[in-house]
Image 1 (tube, one colour):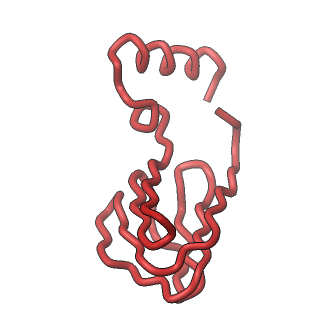
Image 2: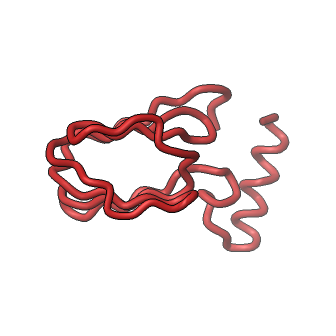
Length: 97
């Protein structure tokens, strides 16, 4: 994404009062304590075990670590995970925003 494009998207987001995660195609994470995580704007499950969930993002991957992880619901761009969540790590690729 070019610098002008990023600035235009940011300006549009501010002018129209739209969430930046939608315009910039970023994931939105909602963590409730260390027991439940809701993720929007993912691009699919790459791998899953009770200790780790790896999701594809538009620009990288999202790694969720913990124990007794369970996928409670999964939709094309949304996923809900429960268990003891101990680590959340975004691995970015491509141009930084």
